[in-house]
Length: 201
Image (tube, rainbow, N blue to C red; front, side):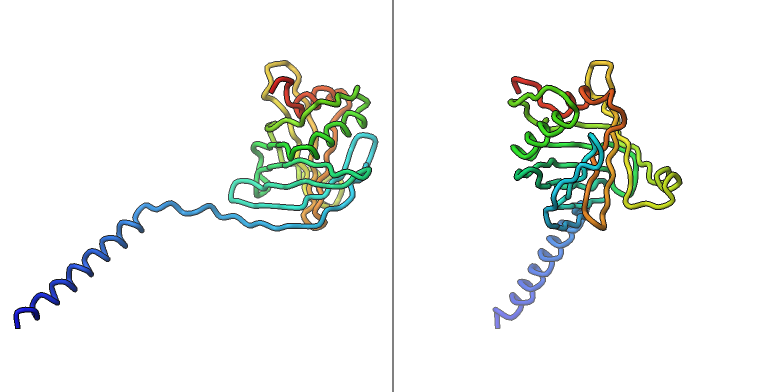
């Protein structure tokens, strides 16, 4: 007889504590970032023009603020490539190149050859190279009558010197390629400097 009133009391305490824990975990908890990831096959790199190249991307991750591409192709029996981040949704913003290790170093030496710049065999692709990114998709559409992908103009501004090399990046999400295009040959050496890790780092 003395144990019966104790059971409802225990049940009430349990329910009160459980509800309190649920309320505290749900309040003000941040939403995880929305992202989607896809993988694709490696394709051979193509030299489109004298100093313009087309590479495949093997991975793509999209978030609400950026699109991250794992750019990898084969060329001359080697893998070459880099990581590339662009603003998502066709917005203007910040672009970022980053190294994938040896294959990025090999891409840098390939650029030296295409640009007619003396080869630096110990050069390393920069860990992080940032540029202002301006989406030109509408201009590209007006000029060509059709859009194979979208085009971005990149301007590198982060260095203390006065040079601000420019280039273009085209992306085709249907065929999974990225075009690495020069704006003007006068930017070749300064662009290489922006993509090269300073010696001693």
